Amino acid sequence: MGAVAAPKRPEATRYKTLDTFAQSLSYVSNQFVEPVDERKLLYAAARGMLTSLDAYSAFFSPAEYRRLREDTDGEFPGVGLLLGPGGDDDAMPDAKEWPIVDEVLAGSPAEKAGIQVDDRILTIDGVATVNPDGTAIKDERYWDGKLRGPSGTRVKVEFLRPGARPAPADMVRAQIKVPSVLHEALAPGIGYVSIRRFQEATAADAALALGALDRAKAARVIIIDLRTDSGGLLEQAIAIADQFLESGLIVTIRGRTDAVETHMAKAGGLAVGSRVIVLVNAETASAAEILAGALQDHKRATVIGMRTYGKGAIQTYFDLIDGSGLKLTTHRYLTPSGHQVEGRGITPDIEVPEFEPELVVAGGTKGDASPEPSGKPGGSHDILEARLAEDYQLRIAYQTARGWLGSK
Image 1 (cartoon, rainbow, N blue to C red):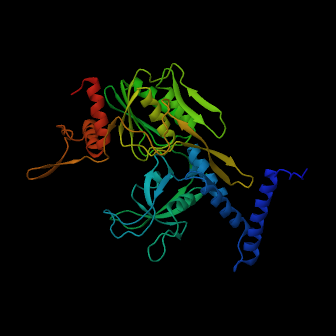
Image 2 (cartoon, rainbow, N blue to C red):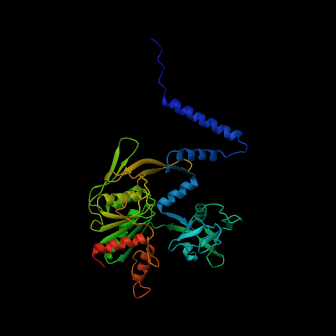
Image 3 (cartoon, helix red, strand yellow):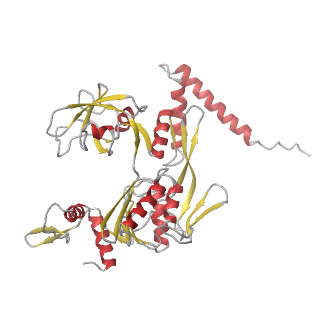
């Protein structure tokens, strides 16, 4: 009888592969034309490994991971500015690529210092944000990180407002809470809830918003705005869906094994008696799609807007020993009807483009039917009318809600 070869052990192959990586690392460390920091090499290898898996998995350095977790928590020490990429625009045609202020949080040190939306940040603690030729030195996330720091510490910026001269601002950092839920009563019986991202306190904040709308008698129809909501924490989306459903499946989650995880609604939600409209667009993703899909499948909401992004994958965060971290795709989810969201998104019940279509008429063009202006300027009704005139998708949602209530 001939000899039988021993079966190959997976561990042996794995260690051989690691030996290859260690050998490659050694060659780069010792033979590359210039010295290279070993941690930088290892981080680059980790980034490459994670990005090779899918579009969502990623590796983060300690600073990047700390920032990511702060964003997830929705609370961080800073001055209350949210920055965007700079460049010229109609307000400042000759602007360099200074980071632009996208948002100033209410009550923040930045608001108290007089900084406003669309201001440009020229320097932070004396360091210019652009090169001499006007190009950006770093992206806006880098400068946003420079504005963060321990509460009680100072940071100085120089900012520029369109049509004005550069001005200084000396601020003391404080603990900043970024609101993920905004709400308001649009009209008798009609409430509006905007969810920007699903953070640690989003479900609790949404419950407070629903309670406030009910007390204001603005909860017969609730418009949930999920436009540009890129997702966040899965459990927060499930908890909010539960407020609108008396029973039934909210989401099915499948992982690497055959195990299937299901989340069911419980009776007694705050908004089970409300009619619901959900606003979505192409940037509505992940946890926001879970909420929209659950309400749509249970016929609890009319979804209005554009087809969503189509991110049906769930990521889990893993802390690493040196403070760095991984965001790794570990599960995929299905809506209650079994709809696969990944790559497909949620299709609206009523498709509405972002901008009002123009109608070609004799003598020129005009938009679709816009709200009629009210008689007296400056009132809350006129503010709403102006807002609806600018936001076509919200206008359609509002008109739909009024139709449900029998309003003219």
